[in-house]
Image 1: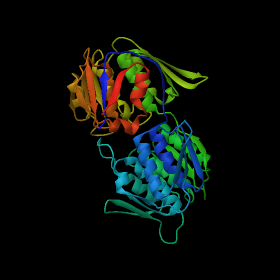
Image 2: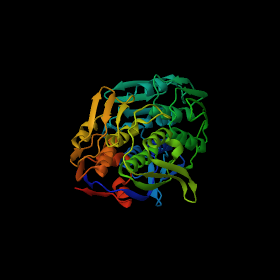
Image 3: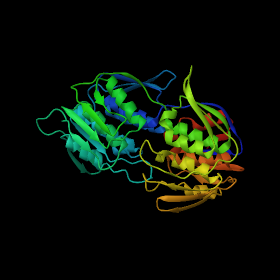
Image 4: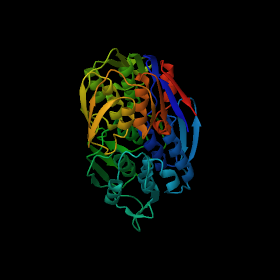
Length: 426
């Protein structure tokens, strides 16, 4: 099993190319199921989760081909397609539930295993089921599978008003894809507003879908009879960009994030500016960029995670590391996932002073951390431990980095390219 060895104490200098967003690429790979025509995606990140989703689609009979040096994948879901997502492939990745909507919309039936993935809390699929039922699907859960079909005599889902009990990103994405081929109009209320959902909607529009309101909490979809192929570039990964912003703020230095979208990171950037980092953003001949500069200790910042456009739960662990070595005491409140403080015990092993009580962690900033052996427990926790290792005195070994590989494209190589002392070991 691979590990990362990090020797801390170096500032970071140079440029980093931000990869395509995992949370956009996964639903967009699934959207290829909506048409028999070829769909080409570029800027697809090289991640374990992407490889798993591709394996799942291959297993269904989707033809996939990698091309070019910019993360290009062409997919063709021509008949026959096996409308099933088996447990063996779904168990490692919760995003596999995103095949449910496209399969139902195009083929009228689907058998999808209940998902697995990170142990950061329950992410129930009941909202997905209720939404599909509102669109006319008959769904039962049996033997660990969601078995869905259209009623006898029906060939298409029907438009519906869907108001979820909670904001759900994957639910919104599933309903978007299903409604694109449904009969009549669908209204999604309490819809998630993440940039990745807007990117999926733009891809579906390029395929011939009629969608308005994406990026807001009310999305209108007018169903069409068929969709066609398209070429689409996956949006840049705001969480990867945010992770590098926190790393530079913690270590000091100056780094330019190429393709970084500051407009997708307002809540994080506001906190970093208040902490004392210098951040500017713009466009040049190379496209979007974010430049971050930092020196000396930052000022501790309290924050509360919430749905976009609030402070993202996927950045909570990384920013907590910054608070661990900042001046002052901060309070971090996690409202999205109930088990997302599992990195705290590992940070304490590095010398951090953190007390947790339910959804709240109180962090007392100290001048330095000290290297130790630590273990990643989930994707974003692994990123936080890498940042902690970059600032800790001495050597830090991060175990179970397969979590990191699920969501970060060659992270150690990118860090090494801007001056970090980091290497992958067996």
